Image (cartoon, rainbow, N blue to C red; front, top):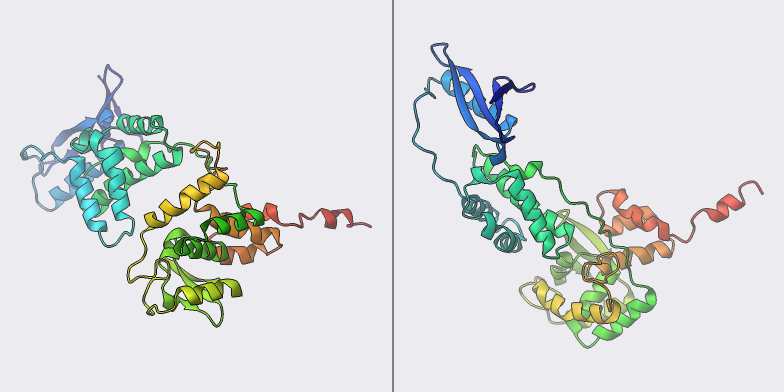
Length: 365
């Protein structure tokens, strides 16, 4: 073995093993000023210099408090990943609106591989292998990244909130490159075609028209209550679950008449889409609307072709794209889309009718 001293972290050492792995340890002075060595673990098990340095600081703090870290402790209780996951999802219950969906993602992609595994034995190599296995199932890179992000969030919650002295191997795994910015939007003719094809289902029709009129995301639309609609001013109050704020959408006279008839008899706190005391589940809309979108616009397209396939979120892009086409300022579109950053809105600038060409041609005329 070849020992080396960390260049960045005081008291941290590594031993290069014959197999190429590294075994980390740290040194400290006990109450009698004797030098003590503690072996922590191997790099292949996810141990890092920052983690060893934190352990060293904890040991030094115990000495200052009069504790004796040299006393042999009983063997560490095995901590499985399922234990970390349970802490995380229990804490998010009732707080995170997508907690159930995230839990199912954990069950489907992570639990079988790592659920019963000791967290100290889950390595960076294991996480990279998980990436590739999900990718091999035909999942998009964005989906793969979301799984790793969930796993990382589980680790970080237990490190920061549960105060566990564990390392997060996900932090050293590079996300997969993605090129999934949706380019597709519906032309006015395609919008009319869609409305004609959903007109036999009033819930879906109202959903589609509100989406095309406000550009709101699915969650925001499904959680609109009757009291959020101001028929006099033709405005609707929308909660953005992504940004966690409320903004105002607008609608025209035709949609006003449809909404007046659709919401007749509803109480102020009733949800508009589905006309009930509880919000309509997103899957009920998806099961009705996705087949229509696939039949009308996605024939022959690979399901992973996220740039060109029409999905429910395309309605939001359609709203912004057609605003840009008719000359709406990019700052107004930003406000109507409730974008936090103008950069998110700039993708629509290329659709504006005035590209500046006429201004340039007449600049010195």
